[in-house]
Image (cartoon, rainbow, N blue to C red):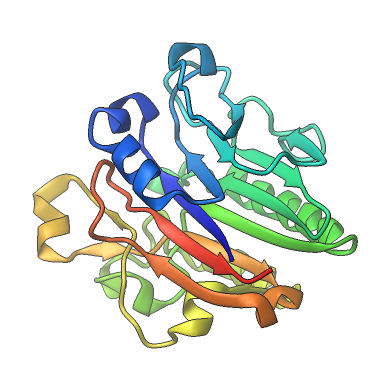
Length: 250
């Protein structure tokens, strides 16, 4: 059984002060995929016995960035999308004999949807990249995809229809990804379950249960026979997001 974790830590240095290592050691996953690390590797000096570390930090310090910590050395690690989208450190791909593992921190469209056009282009390029990977072997995509796909995936859909993360445009891009031969692992297993992975820091949203499910494990359909569970660990604090996990019997 392979255990995968994905977590937008909203700053790895801050999360380390809020119990990250306790969760890391207790869960002992094969793969820990992080988004929004907001740090360069040399700023952290993180010693994780038994794990290989792969970092893709943004050029702008204290912003964006991704990392993967894994017990399994990959055949290859690559960054960005075919050598593009490197400046914000949003994508890491690890290749293994049976699958590609891709962690993604999708751009936020920002207030006023100022970055929606950039986001839409990013999603098109990413989808084409994932389809190309799928033509070679199975694909596991995880991360903060910054979209609540269906109304069940956020507390108040009616008042958020033109807010970042729930626009028709963003939701349609996610639908296109699924139509290209991928599955939302959590929603596949739990079609009616209400669970959230992100809560605003404003107005005590988390204690009130006012959240969004924007963190995912998306799989190519060939992995469906091996899917054992897809979990949202909303009991874990340390960030405005909680960890999500995947169990695959490979």
